[in-house]
Length: 257
Length: 269
Ligand SMILES: Nc1ncnc2c1ncn2[C@@H]1O[C@H](COP(=O)(O)OP(=O)(O)OP(=O)(O)O)[C@@H](O)[C@H]1O
Ligand SMILES: [Mg+2]
Image (cartoon, rainbow over all chains, first blue to last red; front, side, top):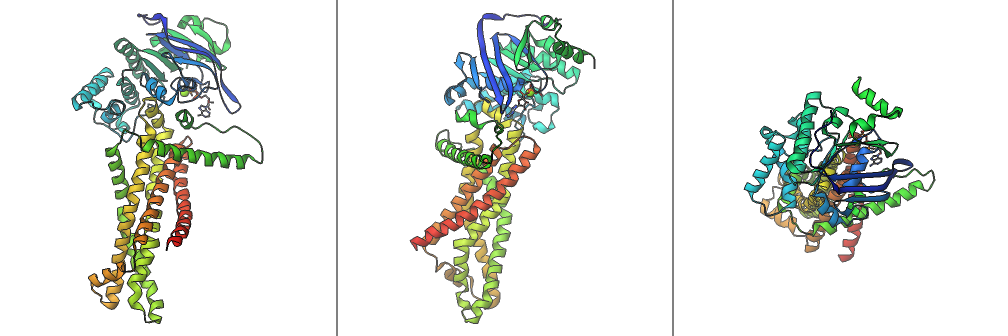
């Protein structure tokens, strides 16, 4: 059962990647990535550990530099972008980190305020508070506002991390393994959250995961990273309808352990 | 562009060569200078973050205040006690206050303060930024467009540059009190007389060079701690290494700077 499709705009590409390569020393992680993300689409990127999924979205957000290829994000060429333009662009992209990356010296409230007050000066206390409340409510964690990150569970941290990126009203969301290390029920809550974020905030998203339940629940389209390239792309059922052992393996291990 | 370079540390390329060490050394030096350059570029640019700066100054001050007080007093006391016998031989115990004041104000106070701060503040900056690096908190700041370099590195380094000279002055004054304890016990000199004798041999150049020295030490401690933390390698071991080498490197540099500055101020005397 795939998820319900909503108003994806296939005429508008928010991310367009062509021939992207990236190596670390002699290790070629990405070897010619071609990928498009359409407006309002949820794209799931699957792949085994160490295939370069995190590297890919770090390149998209300018945290790592591509060796070659084109990476166009919201009309900006990220390779060779100026620091100032990159700064502007990053505000339009939300990045949910694999390990949540909450600022552990700050309370939840300060975590959420941080991107806001540092990007928009002259905000009134009231405006800040109402924005913080709005995103906290969106992730369903209003009661944690005065807690420290260390006091939160893994699932709560993930959700606060997502809330923190939502506060700048991003157009694109990048989720790095949003359900990794969570129990099935919490995972399902996160999946629902990803879908509701898309509906509420009209975002286009790339969701990295090796959790096929998550892929099925949130993905409009699935792309499988194998040997540094997207070898298979399409609807969930299409991607796994193949004789390729590596793909089959991925499927089998996910549902039979 | 430097933003992209200086975020997640990439592994150096494998290169089996005897020049590798040499080359790496120059790459490191280049890296350090770029880091310092970036500090000066960003620290003077708006927005000015006074609140964060004051908070960091407070941290620097409070973290080492107790140690600075205790060591200052002990250094003053011990130094006075130890110089007494030699001066006694010449019947020159009345010179003790001026001897102590010169030793403390010119050399000991900035040095002691810097070494203690390197241990207390430098290591904690290294550890703090290092753990923020390895848990991707710095990356998270970077991707939300919040200028982490300015917020984290510039403010901490500026704080040590401001607070450590103040601590050094404080350390000197406390050491003066430590010296007085010994002088009072032996000669029963009144406090005002002692203070007069203490400040009498000191010229402007002594105050100025002492402050300048402490300022440079402060900057060194802040920038080294930040550099080590900012470029920390991944894993918890990376954080420990960052904190450790922040202390060792800063202490080493402080001594080198001490030698150089003593030479330079010597020319002005
Ligand atoms: N900054 C870096 N420096 C050197 N090598 C790196 C760096 N970042 C990633 N790599 C290497 O690139 C490869 C891909 O890493 P990446 O983190 O993208 O994997 P991943 O697909 O996200 O895996 P996982 O599912 O475990 O998160 C790994 O082999 C890793 O060692
Ligand atoms: Mg990853």
